Image 1 (cartoon, rainbow, N blue to C red):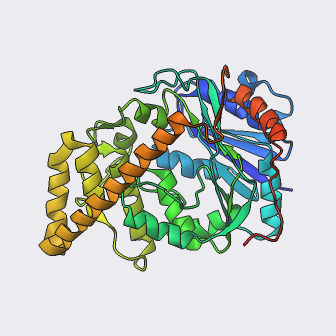
Image 2 (tube, helix red, strand yellow):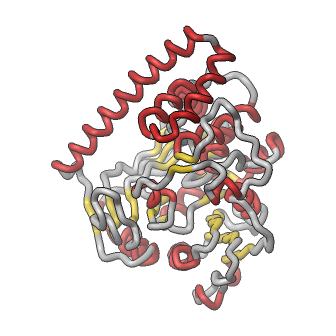
Image 3 (tube, helix red, strand yellow):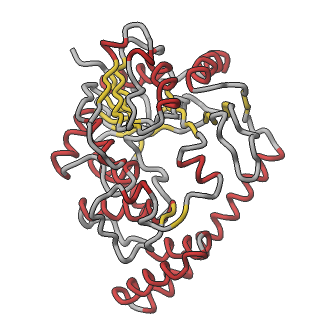
Length: 394
């Protein structure tokens, strides 16, 4: 009988993060299958290194034996997962024991996609922030959560992501740091060829899930805990280094024969990578979700990445040729207003968080995800907040 849940971890040259994460998940429940797709040069993720009782039955280590880019790694790892429900996480993330209850409940209620909030984050000891230094390092940060489950409408979330083009996954349900049924994954693969695509697997799959999901819910509870390490995307972004020449970046150069869309500025950054990947998903889906707000993307690039303005201008000219001057001018004006308002709200939230607790707690001296997982299980019990899984979600 297949397991109720597969937790899938694509990884590359990061065994020192992956091994504690694997151990933390195996320790939670006998009903979890862990699938690790490791494209590292050195074979360091082995049963001998992990050394956890009963892992032979519940741990699947995939060694493709050939170079894969990030998107290919995700698709390859999916092939070996046998769970009724699937969760993809990074090798520096972890999950709580409630995840099994969620999968069983979702199966009973025929739910095919679950969006989680992230009230808890873990920062590895090597995480260094560009302005706050080691303040976060080795700590869990726990915010308030309610345990509530609500009905969710993913197509609206996709439309919002297209309006805020370049803003990321935003509120879309996800396979990466989310949960989907194995049946939904099969349907998407049948209809579109693959669950993951573009150059950012999380946002491409989120768009397809948003279109194909028939019953989706949102859960406000620490089920999946994002981790930020010094080598992670979050860690690099926090250091202000997540930007540069497109073809010079190892994540992008691994995509052989990549043809970039001329309407997306051709440099490596968070908004451009997200935009390209969402655009590829929309191309696969077809029309029906309104205009893609390219001007909002250009405003982001002009504001946050002025060094690469020539690439943004080149894409803007391409967009003008297809849309006309008036539409572009109006779009840029509205994009500037929207992005300015977003910055104001972000600064306000940071100010509030800095001078008020708002329920946020930090728990430090945690060496890795295994230690953080043990601490979180204790904190959840002490919180007195229960995850309410029933049929009465709205």
